[in-house]
Length: 248
Image (cartoon, rainbow, N blue to C red; front, side):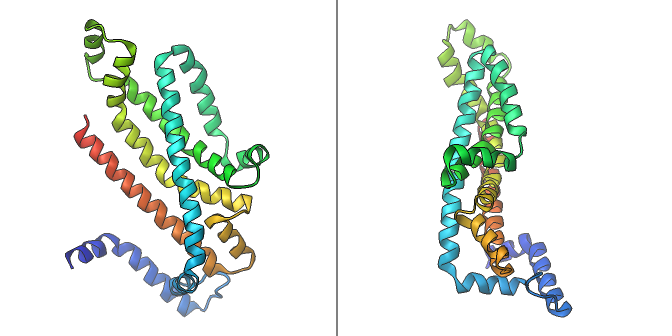
């Protein structure tokens, strides 16, 4: 009961908005093609759970895999820039320019390279997750405790030992920040790519429902993506808070 009360206290604002939404839709008589109420969206979820589960599983799997690959790629390139100032001068501007290109503009190019299938969706998620990892890991590798780098040099530690025993451990809190920033965006990036590619997943389900004027199904797919994104953000925030409290 105490857990239920805590959940209600934490989410009372959302529940109030949903209640107001349902009452307003009922009183205004707005057509369901324009805006269905929360009750209609819940009925759509209950009527076809298998459809939503399969679409959610695909989008979630692509988002999770793309998130991991993007974080690893960003961290790997950040380590290369830590090793070499020349690579830092080459990779940092390229990473900034590449991350500044809108995702919508990248999808047609990537689709021609990887094909109009899930590989392009995965590539988009990797790109979205790459930049926060590259920036924050690079900053963390250089934000060392005062005097620690000099101590390692005096002790004759090799570059590899300075990386594994000093720089990488110091960068863990910054890596957790990158995880928080990329976790929620990975779900939305996968859904946008699926929406534009028109293959499968929650994004495709939303696009197909919208073209059929089935707004209950479209908003149900959006609601699932929102819940997953918020949950991912909250879990990543817990990891970040843990790293900030216990790692430094």
